Length: 599
Ligand SMILES: Nc1ncnc2c1ncn2[C@@H]1O[C@H](COP(=O)(O)OP(=O)(O)OP(=O)(O)O)[C@@H](O)[C@H]1O
Image (cartoon, rainbow, N blue to C red; front, side, top):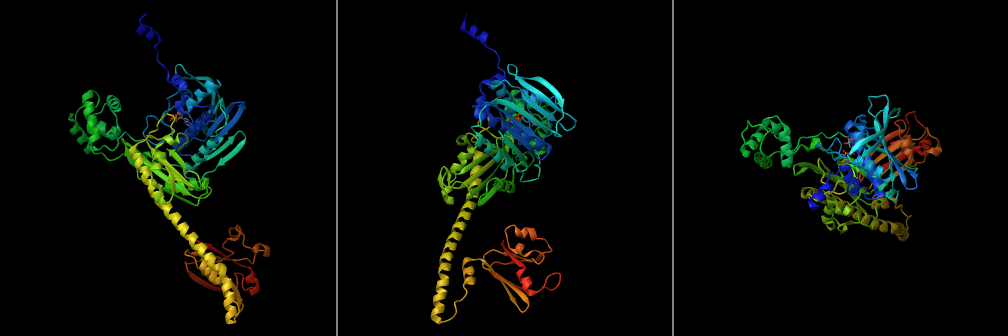
């Protein structure tokens, strides 16, 4: 037989499920250990996306249970809007089925592969179907499904479906069982922790083979869900334009205005004029050559950038700082959200934070936290644009040593938010090298680097001053004693002088002529807040200042005064009674508590 004919007998189409069954590494299932993280990541991403769309504060449960020697059951449950029963088999049992692929807006999920790939991986390694429970909030019961994927045709197979009672009013629970190990537990915890940092509105509880972890909310504000926008004329490609034109019944001008973002009356006329096409032509039926001319004109005519504020949802400077403060306790944190920019017609925003000190390792390389559309990126750090851009910054200019990335107790967080995050592969591990994004990352890190430099030099200066002051103070009492001896006078009290040198606040209480005199000297460079409490209602043992004490008694009844004392100034008062009338001076003196805070 002729070879071509022989080959022809073997040629057949491959279903996408078969393809990914063989190429599971492309979807982040390259090893059993990684499989567990990928599955949780995909399911949690879906939960967060769904809650965001429904504008509810996410309450997510993640469970991992070992069921056999090397088999683990992974459970992810959310309080999102749920999935209508008709759709459940497709969401979990068909690859490339999802709601986000055709929408131009920031979302964690894009391709409609994520969770079905996990179902595929489970049936490949254990043959166990996925269990899905979902309730939409309109129904009194939830639906429970057992689902598998018919790989040869990439279609769902429902093994069981029943109505059940479920204590969640709405939401989705998925259980997937596959061969794995908990070798990557640390990375998994990192994933959950970093997810909590950039989603401070989410509450995540986890039970990892019996060990419980809680990531509480840092904010009770729901995120305003990003809205989908039409494609931008500068970001459109020939194939998409052709498909859109063929599906349209509009005339060219309306087609441009309605089909694309930021195209108005004026620039639609300009595009049509430049393309040389007649304005009364319909979009449908344009020939290939005509479409090419139209595309050229669309990409040449000036059109304002896409409306990023609608379709993107950056985390925001305050929330990033709050998220970092919640999960890492550092000495310094600053964050910046840049203005939106565009690459190939896709809007994007870069935001970043820099943290310093605290419990960060002081010797090793900086810790880099990479995020894309609020999802932590855990693998392929070296191949990611974020790492690369961070290495291009001249950190030495900000007093940090560097080997590519900075060395020392530094934390760098970078978040890229876009309607189309350019990942290097379907497993969404690393951001691809797009010059426009690279430039924004470098700029934001330089800006934060300058702030860190200011902080470090201020801190070093303060430390130096303090050391000098301490040295002077240590010899002051000796000098006072010697001078007193020489001039034959009593040894003076040097405490005020020491306080002045050490830049402290000095409070003095004195009883004289039936009155309590309180004087305060603020030698610091910051305002000091002084609160005086009347302790006469409390027992004597309670009247000792303890760290938690001030809050406990800080009601209006006990509070006598609160004053602010400006930097490097003093304040005096005298006191002779309380709100009940006159009390014995000695008694009052013992029961006046003076608390000073440097603001
Ligand atoms: N927990 C959930 N609650 C509500 N809808 C969900 C949930 N999980 C998945 N979905 C729906 O199922 C679709 C498919 O999910 P899937 O994880 O396969 O892909 P995706 O998240 O859209 O994209 P990607 O492949 O990039 O992760 C989603 O687009 C969403 O509409």
